[in-house]
Image (tube, rainbow, N blue to C red; front, side, top):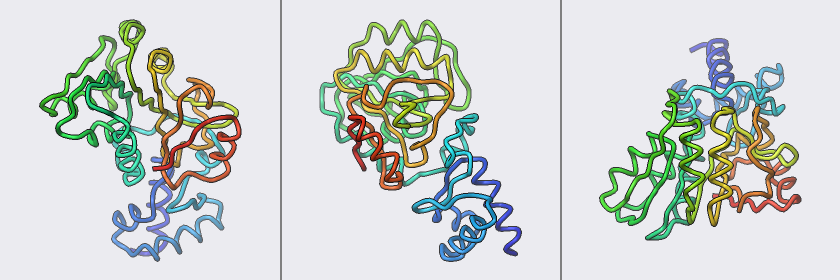
Length: 257
């Protein structure tokens, strides 16, 4: 494949998914990681994208422009190692007998996958994808709210969903996010899902926001909470140091998986 064609494909991928790792690009393009790194350096000099630790990010992500959320299929192929690590770190906080809320998103699915096979407890979720994973655990109970179903993520939302979470008092909650910024706080893309997220935070003894490195410094359209209004944020090693430090200065506990 000629360099120009690789650059075109890299640009299209980065614009679509926001951030992508060097390893993912190398696999998709059937070239070495070193070739990808050279391509990214050239493309950064041309102002097409920005190199970040372990890969590349679109200019919109780097500049903190919320925009629209990428489709679920695209997000599920992005930051796979980071989301797996976050899922394992989150699942390690879950103990037998707990009632656990797992929110929506690709990272939420990884949390569900990381739960041990012998987990005995209850998982409440607005995500049919999370529910499907947890339902395979022989000793786990799954609670689903009613509401309107959004395609892609297969998430329930609306008044019925909010009413369900207003009456649920969980031991532990994991909240998905579209962006984490020290000033703007935790933000997300879908207005109709914000109410349920706020209730999950308010009614849980411990509530962690989950955000891979691409979410830091990004601001989505709708605010969920301030960065110090949750128990902490679980992220991965690709998170940039500056926005993480800014969040910690505001009293946010950041756990790096």
